[in-house]
Image (cartoon, rainbow, N blue to C red; front, top):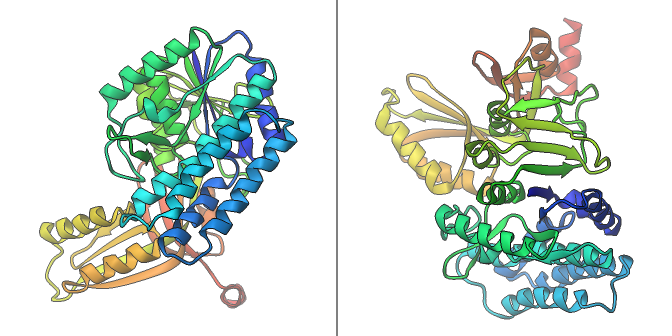
Length: 431
């Protein structure tokens, strides 16, 4: 059995669903578990529904109607009007209607999971019916009945023993009379039947969980790129596809912010030595990039850029040293606010860290620290990571940028930078 994962870009419209069906048909005769994300930008759109509902701005129903219309247009274009898919999709959207009819729950993250999860449930239903209409023997599985988590909404942790037992039994049973099982990425359930989510872009992780639980031969992520590249093709012209990566290199890349794979994906696969293929959905015959336990070779410079970063400078007020208790207090607050630290450094009287710019969380951080520390926050920055750097690569990435923070290891350099204003560049060029 193989596990295929298709992201939102793969199923953003009706031609996307048709293309996914054709990829699956290309592998006729193989047993497949298919993990699918919400269509296109549906997750973002559902997030606006959650925000409108929670803060009672009166637009939640209007925003939900736009999402419904988009999905019904896809169904119509696929020629599935008049089939049971309409009732299936309507029943799923009714779940949100019921929520919006009531007063908001006092926990935003709980509401988020109950509403945003509908995106994957609807897209997987559409894919299931698309496959059936094209003669592919498919079954549909609600992953919430097999993937169990704790109750930390929006970042739920998997209960591995229970999940492994349920996933393996259910998928193996379905594949006895089906060739394909279609299920959802990103979502799970508590043992009390409350829907949870695994974190944004978590469908890769779901596919890895299923691969682990079912001892899959391989996992395949289908994307709009030829494979894993040395940089984001939207930002760089001369990127190169890497034919092979080790698990270690893939983990390093995702840790530093590479978006091609979710950071949690690799560990379940590495634990059972299951290879991962990152493949182009416009060319099913291409194997793309293989990620496995094979020995590492030579890697070219790999550039990862994280935008919208903030640099937080924390200084003691009385010029005493930044000691262990200070750092412990700071990290306790960071953990409470769920702010991930991307870079950090301490000096005698200060502690500097780089985090994603979450305005609300940063304001709370400053408020909680200001009794003891002076806090300065600079926003509008980029964090650039270069794996296997060369002098030329560093020079290129520093061009027209002011470096505010730099950290260098044996084979990795990280820079926090901001653009030099054009007028400043001209003055410097005149020198």
